[in-house]
Length: 301
DNA sequence: GATAGAT
DNA sequence: ATCTATCAACGCGCA
DNA sequence: TGCGCG
Image (tube, rainbow, N blue to C red):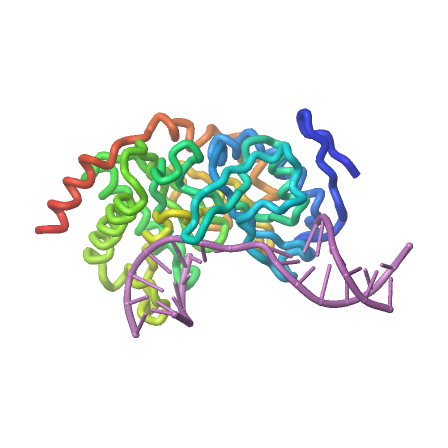
């Protein structure tokens, strides 16, 4: 079966294959979801390399990550060649509606996107703080998010945006002007996390090794490195019930909110009824130059 | 999921 | 014509 | 150099 998406014909294979067997969600359901959400997604994915997390046999089957665009991908799918440690890799970008459709047909349930864009690949235009609980205690995640917001906005004069991951935690995203490279940005992110963790060492940790976290909330600043990715806004997660990574208003971060509050099945109603929580996302970019100086002083006290 | 090679 | 095997990531920290 | 990690 072929779908016409804009000016492109996208072939759809195995449209009735159940990708989420319990929820009864088929491949064509996933494709229709991404078609409906495309206009809300593409502003955040345009010109960014994508890592595909593919599940050709559904969430119960074998999955794999794919970075290199396959030879058989169509010419109209935009790609970019980016340097890697040993050579070069040609990666897909989600720049149009048909791209989302094509990737969904490939069994890519969850696209992950770079923090930088193709025209300045070594300079991220955002920071991501990944708050990942070891258990499912979302209250700890909410408190941590508020601690981050206080430091980032009140002390460091940056703007923050919040998103459920659709899995267990939250992402805090800080839009920045592209005048610092990944090493500089990661160093800054590391400092931020260490200040937060030092303030509440029983609640938070920046330990990479799982066995050293001892039940504490992991503050992951390592996302802010070259060629690292974070889950795409409104991406479907390959978990029971098809939860969706969802941008939120800060004021929503309380009470019964949790990381899987929104799913493929109920997100559309939210989109229809709510304003865009990230309305001012791209207007909010700030330079890290001054925040870096302030952070340096805080770390040396 | 798509393809090449084997039956 | 059908089946089967094969392939599809990588950067960083640290032991 | 190789493993753990996301």
